[in-house]
Length: 419
Image (cartoon, rainbow, N blue to C red; front, top):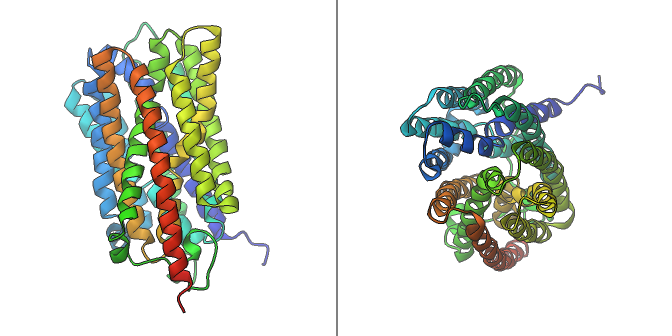
């Protein structure tokens, strides 16, 4: 029957469910756990923040070998192993009472994310949905925001129990059960590749965005100065955005905003994260890389300054909500934009290897950002100064990316004009 549902949409739905659960419950809620854990265990925030460092370092290491692991074990087995790693991680978080146990949990969290989130979805979409990849990626990664909204409401309700400082442990056990159930569903219905799938590379006559151009060999890409400028920019962007996002809920509570309102801000943030990830995918497909990068980067500078000057006042609460809404427009720079950077700047020939590098350096940035920003809090007793500094740094990064995109476009024209 011709009306039979194309299985690629089942795959897209499974990827959506995977992102909804894994990033929504295991990542979007992490800032809600900082204050309860450090207070319950009398732990400094900078010490606890190394949990994120172990997570992101493990992501960086695993992604270096991502292509090799996919070719050896296949996508389905890696996804199953990723869900198992996340269940182990949540179980350790639920029982840990000393700092090094949290670090082990962070390592398993990083391994799980390596095989269930952005890199894996990029690989699956490249295999199953070759047309309008930006829109499809945006739609799938939008699940992070929806999942985060549901997870934030659930976790806030469980943790918001002042008579029990260890209520956060119940939240982690709840997440572990949800991850296990969803993981079983995804693995059962997932298929490795479409029928008749053939690895192909476009020819020199192909135009348009991303994988629609032939690109350059990886060996040539690593000789280009703008490759390293792009990688460093991605690393610093990851450091800044993840560091600030991870500290945002704690900062809002530090300035005196009540926990229930902070939870509302985080929920609204998660909803708009879904909206803007989908929208950014469409913007990229319609207007290209430069417009997309400029929109996200300029927004990131604005929301960092807004967050820095939030106070416990009617105006301050409005500013907090503005941050919650528009910070979601900045975050695609560290998720959906990674495969887009790889495909648009370097093309099909080197896509897999460049994506692995970009995800790895982005994860290194994540590791550094959390430690630096929370370290500044421990030194100065406030996040305000480091938030302002990060806004200034993003202005510099945006300027560098203009040069990177210009040089990449020149290289692309040379390749496409060859006879």
